[in-house]
Figure 1 (cartoon, helix red, strand yellow):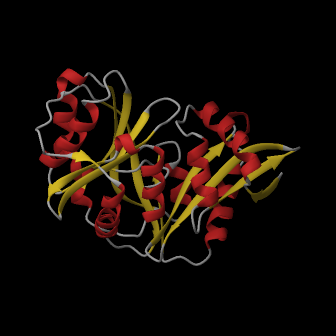
Figure 2 (cartoon, helix red, strand yellow):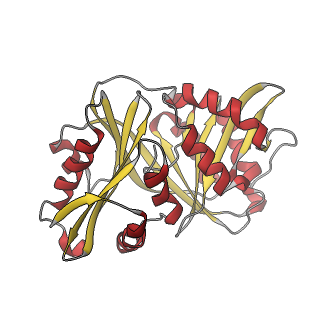
Amino acid sequence: MILRPMAHADIAAGLRLCRAAQWNQLEDDWRCFLELKGSGCMLAERDGSVIGTAAFLRYGSSFSWISMMLVDPRERGAGIGSRLLESALDALGPQSCVRLDATPLGQPLYCRHGFVPEYELDRAKATVAAERFHPLPGAARPMEPEDLHRVLEFDRQVFGADRRELLVSLYRRAPKFAWIAGQGTLLAGYSFGRPGYLYNQLGPIIAESAAIARELVSHCFFRHDGVSFAIDVPEAAREWVPWMESVGFEVERPFLRMSRGEIRSHGLPERQFGIAGPEFG
C-alpha cells in the first residue's frame, strides 16, 4: 500500500468510496479539497486501486479541518484509517488547532490521535412540504453578489476563521439556497447550501436568533417543494429543533465536533444554527 496526494484524476475513485459508504458528496465537493487555498487530500492505494482518503482544509491561522476519512468497506480494520489520518496531519504541519466532525464510528480513531470532544451536533432531514412554511414578507430575500462582501466579513466573526473561499464556492454552486436577512446595511442572518447525491445540504445557517433562522429556512424551502434537505444543527442551536420537527424534519444521527491542540472557543456558536456540513465545518 502507498500513500500519496490526491489529484483531479482520482475524484472518480473518491466518489466510489462515497457511494460505498452512502455519503452525500459530489464531484464539486472533492474539488474544494483540491482547489481551495491550503487544502488537500491524501489517499491510500493498493495495486492501482484507491482504498481510502483523508482530506484537509486550512482556515487561515485560526484552525485547520480534517474530513472525508473514507476506507473501502472491504479494507476496514487493517489500520488504513489511522495511517491516512496521520498523513493528513503531517501534510498540515505544525498547527495550533485541528478540528473535525466525527461520526460515532470514527470517534475512537480520533480519540487515539489526541482529539477531544467540543460539542455535539444532530443531523436533521426532511422532504420539504412547502405548505408547512409561511415566510413573512420582507423578512429575508435572495442573496445577491453584492451582498457577499459584508456576509463574508461577518462570517469570519461567527465561524471564528476566514472561510470566504468556501462560501463563495457554495454561492456559485447553488445561489438558490443563499438567503439574507436584515434591514439596510444591518445584517441579521444568512444561509448557503449545496446539492448532494442523496439530498441537498442547507448550511451554514447563521442568524442572530432562532426566529431569523426560521425565516431564512422558510423563505428557501417555500420555493423547493418536494425536495430533500439535511441541516446539521450544533448543540448550542438545539432550541430550534422542535420547530424543525414541527415542519417535518426528523433527527437522524449525531456527530461530535472534536479538536486537537490549543483548546479555546471559536467564533460565536450561539449564532450558528446549521453548519456547512461535517466536510467543511
